[in-house]
Image (cartoon, rainbow over the protein chains, first blue to last red):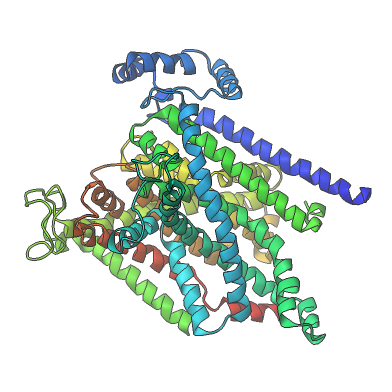
Amino acid sequence: MFFRSRPSLKWLCTVLGRNCMQLGILIILGFLLPRLIPGSPLSFSADQIDVLNAMLPKETFNRFTDYYAPEQPLIKQFAGYLRHLARGDWGYSFYYGLAVREIVMSRVTLTLFLSLTSIVISIFIAVSLGAYLALKGGGYLEKGLLTLLLVLQTIPVFLLAILCRMLFAHHLGWFPAFGAYPLVMTPADAGFALHFLRHAILPIAVLILYTVPPVAVLTRNVVQKIKREPYVEAAYYFGIRERIIWLYYILLNSLPEILGRLNITFLYAIAGALFVEIIFSYPGMGTLMKVAVEARDYPLIQGIFLVTSIYSIAINMLFELLSIKLNPRLTKMT
Amino acid sequence: MRNATVKKAALLVLLIMVVLGIAYPALAPFHPDDFSFPALLPPGGKHLLGTNKMGQDIFSALLAGFRVTISIALIVSFCSTLIGTALAVSCAFFRHWVDRFIMRVTEIFIIVPEIIVIMLFAAFAGPKVADVVMVMIFFSWSRITRILRGKAMVIINQDTVQYTLLLKGNLLDVGRKMWPYFYPAVTTLFIQQCGRAAVYEATLSFLGIGDPALKSWGRTIRAALDYEGIFWDHTYLWWLLPPILCLVLFVLALALLTFDFDEESESAERSE
């Protein structure tokens, strides 16, 4: 037992180490790139900074120069940047004039709700759909489904959201078109939960439509490969019931490979959630991002970038750990 | 058989779109910037798709989109495929620390979804089209390098390539010898990258990043969404829907060109 658990602990450390390194590199990038890209307020020279001074209210401008200290040498700026991050101080938004952390934190829950709910539902739909296509494939229905998946896969997520909003919210009028709840209501009102769910159905459905196709196609390919493994054929010769073969011999053995390659898909699902929010004016990080980009609100954009990165890395790590749990053999590789 | 028919149809659609893009000044009934018409006309008569809020002809803007969107997609895709391929070949040629360094850099680009990073930097890069195109290229090559590196590592072991290495051929010679084995994968990635670039452009336009005067489909979509009444009267049918359909058709045709419907039979053959 001791012998078995040791390599997996070592692997756990490698996974953690790699993800921490990625986080570190992202933090360094978050510092360097805005200073290199022309046009960002941090790459302004002394005379350009006067323009910013004229553009922003006095108080906001002072906070900005206090926070970033653009007159100091780069090394000192970097030290200050790290110190701020460690303290959880992300600067002040130009547009709102509030601390970035407060603004972002007030929005992040709804984005987490949308993306996590849709990810969980998508896994179940996509894996069963993909397995069905691989195990029963060949008919017209399956070919049609596959083509439909392909079409869905090519449509950018915000267009998918617009189309769904057009059809289901405006044309058919089945669901509310925007917001997370009626503006006149507060969480204390009776029936709030019901309204909240009704508002969430359409955005979550769009996200599912967006996430399912790549995962289903992936599952189909993996299951198709496993289906031809010798041990599966052997199981057929032994006359084991087909349902048991499908479930225990094929599907269970496909899961590690599917999970191992899923993380990138779900990183895209996070970005997708931001765009879907914008279309449905859902008050999460996406709508915040739109405001920040339109107002060229640098500190706020950076805050959103950092939170999204941390969330992406967390999801990435979760999937890596899950696939180890499901397939201990992985620890022996790399 | 069926595969070939689908691909021919996709190619035909793309060809028509490119021709429309080239010939658009002759085909468009009005200049897309001409705002001398009554605003928000329904389709019919002089204006095939009506006019927008500014009194511009929507059909002309849609036609202009063929040229703008397709050329942005081609430029971004060509440059990022070129950079990505060159780096992948370098990985296989130099190996050791060059390979490791390039791989580390590409790994970073995977973690955060490309579009968010593109957006972050395009927001500041200034409103010029060239700037936005540069940012898109900068964040697109990594995917191509990642995929092609594995292929390059295998192809470099081909006899002809190994002879070139023995004769102390430089990176360029080796690249040229590798090309015959390389080009199917490169072409597929180039086509896929075209679709991605078109989608990125639309997404950035949708977020209001880039040149506001540009007549891409993404811009037309954004302008339509900016009109408050778009969903309340039936304007969306002729203002919002046509550019969406054009964009989806373009991306879908590109995807069909690279998608393999007969994958099942083909991989079955391979396993035997």
